[in-house]
Amino acid sequence: MDIHFRITLAVLFVAFVVHRGYYTHKYEANDPARFSTQMSMLAQRVMTVLIILPPVVLLFYLVAPRWLNWAALSVGDGLRWAGLGLALVGFGLLQWAQNELGRHWSDEARLQADHQLVTTGPYRWLRHPIYGAFLLILSAPLLLSANWLVGGLWIGMTCVDITRRIWTEEALLLARYGEVYRAYCRRTGRIWPRMWGRRERG
Image 1 (cartoon, rainbow, N blue to C red):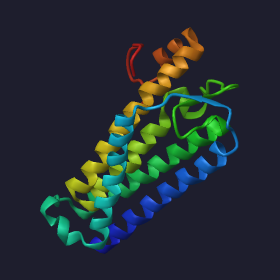
Image 2: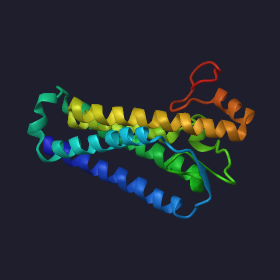
Image 3: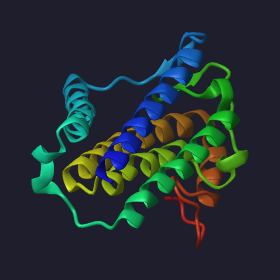
Image 4: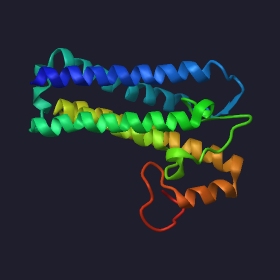
C-alpha cells in the first residue's frame, strides 16, 4: 500500500506547484505597478533553506523510503487517506480564495496602486484563507507519508513562511486602510473563522 501513498503525495505536490506557478505567471507578469516590502539578506537565506529542505526530503521519501524508516510513524491506512481529504479541502479553499482575489493576488506581500480590500467569499470570515489552505495542503504529507520528518518539515516551513507573510501583509493593509482594516480584523480570524469574541487579533 505504501506505493499508493507515495504516488498520491507526489501528485499532490505537483498539483500544488502547478497551481502556484499558474497564478504567479498569470498575475505577476501582467501587473508591474506594485508596492512591496523586501526581506533582509539573512531572512532571504533562511527562507531559501526552509523552502528547499522539505522538497529534498520528500524526494528521498518518494524514491527511497527505506532511508527514512527511522522517522516512520505508526499510522493506520484510514488516517493516512484522511491526509488526502485534508489536502482536497485545502485545494478547494485555495481556489475559492483565489477566485475572489482575482488580479489583486500576489505571491509576495505587495499592494497594487488601485488595490481594493476584498471581504467577499472566504474573506468574509478569514483574512488569510489562502494561508489556511496552505496549512491544510502542506499538513497532508505528515499523514500520507506516515513520517514525522517529511511531515514536520513541511508543516514547519509553512508555519514560518505564512507567519512572515501575514505580519508583512497586515502591516501594509493597515497602513493603506487604517481603521477600515482594524474593523475588518475585529470581525474576522486570520486563518480560521472567529468563533468567539471580537478581539483585535485573529
